[in-house]
Image 1 (tube, each protein chain N blue to C red):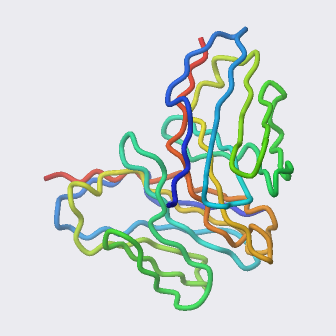
Image 2 (cartoon, each protein chain N blue to C red; image 1 turned 180 degrees about the vertical axis):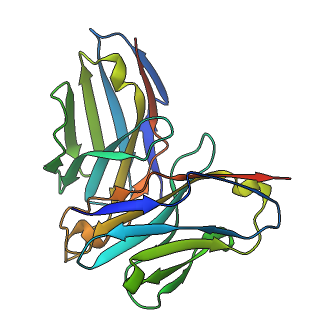
Length: 115
Length: 117
């Protein structure tokens, strides 16, 4: 069975600081990788996804993530955060061979950006 | 339009009540999902419907009963719930490809905040 671990549960940083959130997964086969964001009081939104191809993917709102297959990692980055990036961030994985799209989420990282 | 809608937004029910949660999407997606999310926790998969047929039931208690009346609608019928069932219930949908739903992105609705007294 696959599992997903996110290294930090809480991150506090100032506006304009750089953000990097770690995500590692455990699965021996081909995976699809996602980062979702949940702003306070809002629903889960897709930030970016990786299915195949260029391991550096760009998403919405200036976020990007890099898939490193050898490290089973899919870390999320943003060079300069804004107060509006305060949210819960979830890494998620499903097996590319899974016919039913079962999505396994990490525990989430609460990011607080201070003005 | 990548919108999944859910009603109601909030629901308070007693342990003897029967209620239903509704989910709707008009994106032509043929896979729909129910997740349960407790506070400060990630979503946990409950059910998957693919082409209106139940494909996955993640050992969910029978007091939760899903229904997929057509390709756009997904219901979750609730009966005799417990206080520990209080949570945010999320619906999601994804398109299907010839290789199955596993490669598709899931789009989430805003959820129904359920409180069981």
